[in-house]
Length: 210
Image (cartoon, rainbow, N blue to C red; front, side):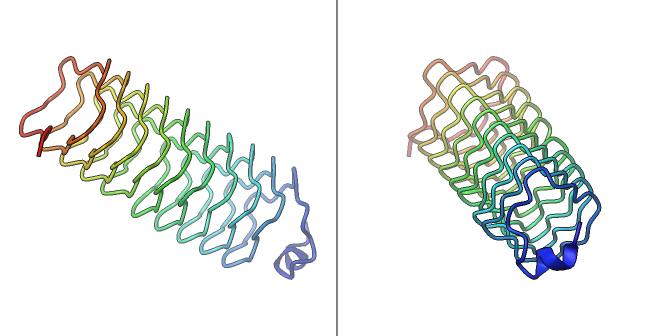
C-alpha cells in the first residue's frame, strides 16, 4: 500500500485495504472510505478520521491516542486499541467490540454505542453524556466517576459494574441489569429505573432525589 499517496490525499477509497502495522500517525484521513479495512496494529495516533467510514474495520491493538474519530465505526473491532484522549463525540460505534481498549480521557459524549461490547473496560471519569448505550455490554466495567447524565442505558448489561460516584442524572436505565453493581454515592436524580434489576447492588449514599 502506498502510504505516501494516502498521506497526500491521493487515495480516497480504501475499503478492505490492508493497512496492518502501517504508520499513519498524524495523517489526515477525513472522509475516507475505510470500510472493512484491516488496521490491526497500525499507528493512527493524532490522525484525523472525522467523517471517515470504518464500518466493519478491524483495529485490533491499533494506536489511536489523541485521534479524531468522529466517524462511522459500525461493528468495528477495536479490541485492545489505545483510544486514550481520542475524540469519539457522536461517533457511530453501534455493535463495536471495545474489549480491553484503553479509553483514558476519551471523549464519548453523544456517541452511539448501542449493542457495543465494553465488558470489563476501564471508563473511569469518561464523558458519556447523552450517549446511546442501549443493550450495551458493560458487565464488570469501571465507570467510577463517569459522566452518564442523560445517557440511554435501556436494557444495558451492568452486572458487577463499578458506578461509584457516577453521574446518572436523567439517565434511562429502564430494563437494565444492575445486579451486583456498585452505585456507592452515585447520582441517580431523575433517572428512569423502571424494570431495572438492582439485586445485590450497593446503593449506599446513592442520590435519588435532590
